[in-house]
Length: 416
Picture (tube, rainbow, N blue to C red):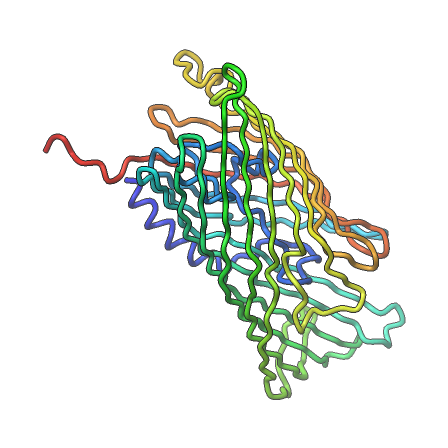
């Protein structure tokens, strides 16, 4: 049954991942857009903590974890996001529903294999600048698209408590921006249409180690390193005169020839280090530190003199608690309760103001009776950006749902 589910959902997500608008943030104008969280909702509910060598859940953040899987695991997650955008004078509300990841993990003895598809970054904004006098040019900006990541990873268990792993990622996607300049009351304007086709390959390395330090208490650790790589962007720019109506439906009157160029964008290296202590299948408390350069650099169509791309850094604390993992009399005691706190310095600096992200996460893992599978719910409240220096602050609330389904494959039948 799980094989049929995997095939059906793979086809669905492959189509939807190209079409969805994964963000409504004006900050997605810069670089390659808003970089999405790379991980399952189980980890996201703990502010990104993914330090335990789990045997029934996929850890998308460290390829070394695949070697600890005991069952074939299929996972799928999506999010409903609401955001309030505000500056010093006004505010607006937006909503988005997205598919966040699709992945499969296969146990192969001391080895483990993982593969899947993740939206890596998202572009989705609509911005308008209206002249107060009515005689100067007004501007409307909107952008869509993003970068997707198809990955294949392998983990190897060197010792019962020590794993190493690596994965290769093929990055692909398309970003389109539409900029319109017009004068109030004049139904003719100038449009600049930009399209960027993105592609590239990058690699991640990982290791995980855990050891018992006191009776039932275990020390957990995880280290990942993303190698520096490049992303090829094939750009196309078209400038045209257009006629528009009150709904801003555009009709091209006169267009110049397309201008095609190709540039290489940097995909910088990144290091993540996690540690924690806990009792396996009972509780866990830990933290994560990540640092590197910014995840995306300016392209030809979104380069700005008031923008600087600095260093990336994040810190988070999180954990889980299970009242009684083996309880037969109480379903509530088998529920996994998760929570976490995060602070992220995105590396994006606009008008000398650093764009930071901070939030609170919590979630529930609901076991499916009679199996090792489970349904997970996650909740996230946070704030990104600032209203200083004529910028925008985003107050967001996200609700996430994921499925982690387990089965046994490649098992030889004992009876016909």
